[in-house]
Image (cartoon, rainbow, N blue to C red; front, side):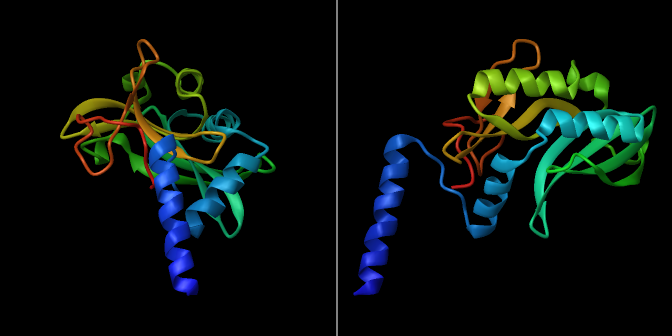
Length: 192
C-alpha cells in the first residue's frame, strides 16, 4: 500500500513538473547543492571577482559546488598563458585554495578570456537578466578547436535548473536540450 501511494505521489510530481515546465532535480545531492546555492551569501559575481584577485587572471569558468556541506565557487582563470583554479567559500567569500592548472597550450580546447567577448561577470549579468534566475555555472564552450558559445546553468526561484547557450553579443539565451548535441535546442530544462 505504501509503495502504491509513493508511486502515485511521484507520478503526480512528474505530471505537475511536465505541466508547469519545472525541472526536477535528479537526487538528494542535487537538492542539497541547490539549497546551499540559494542560501549562498556570496553570489557568482563575488566568487569570480575574488578568484580574479587571488590569481591575477581573468575568469573563463565559474560554477557552484557543494563540498562537505559547504557551498564553494570553483573558478578557472587565465593570466597570460597560465591557467589556475581558485576555490572560494560561498558563505564567507574567503579563498579556500588556488591551484596551478598548467599552460593554456596544454589543452587543445582551452578557452581564453578574449574568446568570451566580455568579462565573465558581465556575461553573468546578461544571463541573469535574460534567464529570470541566478547563474549557478557559466563557461565558454570550445570543442574540436572551435568556440561554440557560452554555456550557462540558471536556477529559478522554485529551485528548477535550466541550461542555456548565451549569445555574448546580444545577451539572448538559447535553451539546450540535454542528451543531444548543443546545436539542438528545445526547452532549456535540465537535471530532471
